[in-house]
Image 1 (cartoon, helix red, strand yellow):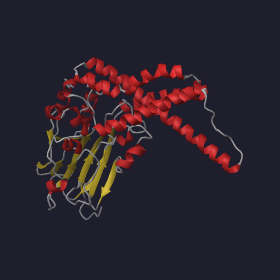
Image 2 (cartoon, one colour; image 1 turned 45 degrees about the vertical axis):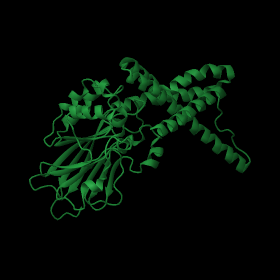
Image 3 (cartoon, helix red, strand yellow; image 1 turned 90 degrees about the horizontal axis):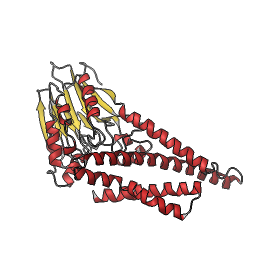
Image 4 (spheres, rainbow, N blue to C red; image 1 turned 45 degrees about the horizontal axis):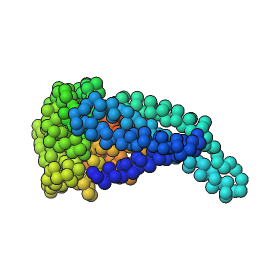
Amino acid sequence: MPLFLLVFFLIYGSAHLYALAKVRTAFGFGWKGSVAVIPVLGVLCAGPVLVHVLGTHEMGLAARVASWTGYTWMGLLFFFTWLNLAMDAVNLGAKLLTSAVGRGPDPLIRYGKVACLALVGLSVGLCAYATIEASRVRVEHVRILTGKLPASVSRLRIAQISDVHLGLMVRRRQAIAIADLVRSVQPDLVVSTGDLVDARPNHLDGLAEIFRQISAPLGKFAVTGNHEAYAGIDRSLDFTRRAGFRLLRGEAVVVGDVLRIVGVDDPTVEAMRLAPSRSEKEILGASISPHFTLLLKHRPVPPSGVVPQIDLQLSGHTHRGQLFPFRFLVRLAYPFLAGLYPRGADGTLYVSRGIGTWGPRMRFLSPPEITVLDVERRPTGSAT
């Protein structure tokens, strides 16, 4: 965690300095103007820490105001930074081309007040669109064929929610909308693949009851994500249980003689010594179960090699990058970024884009989703 914070603030602080340098270039104000602006930027840069401190000291309203202010600024700065970097890349390309051929525009786009204000306006527009996109949850339908369902079951419907991030910015209205959507698809089984909460659970009054009202014939199961650890593992687990989920922490259960569900803790929970470490292979064992086996794991990292004991792994965590083009960096760490990935002859990995957000209440080219997975019995004689 300290290393993550160091890297985060190094990058975030650099973005502030880069934006200040671009505005200075455009408007030509001197060092006195910079000195006057830097304290304000410093407070905005420290926004995530301020939100945490206010939340820890039970100052809920102040924490929510700081959260909306600080994270909206973070989204605006993100768009302004990458738009400027894109313009710099275009001008660098024009400069290199001019040097190579001996003539041409250099720079291609002259950076001044007009260009800077245009990028500010475009950044505001992108923030507005991204805020709207984050509020429109899609229902994604996925079909999985298997030969492992019992003869009495032709279809098993699983509703997956992931990365809801209930907290200061995702609250009652969004929780009710999510619960209504899940109920509308009439699932046999509901699973949460981590990061159900994003804040200290004492800021989540009344939200557990909303999720508790969701019912499914085969039950509701959940695993931890990294944010359960950040929010306080004991209270996060208590909230998840009060929401009606059975937590699977390094264990496997057979449900209704229909399927086997395996759930593992997020590595953050293990790294903070909040749970014993137990690998998926240890839990699964060496033999292949006659039951359809579902692995719930927050991060989209399959067990090494092809593991025939797993028929379907459900994960989240990546948000598909949340704000384009950040997905290209996220893909470096998590190649299975979002969507459906075949794993071996019969295994499948599905990575949800998630429902909520981390940081800005925004999504750009990564709409939130609830996933409906219909596991259907493969027709007799079918090879696929």
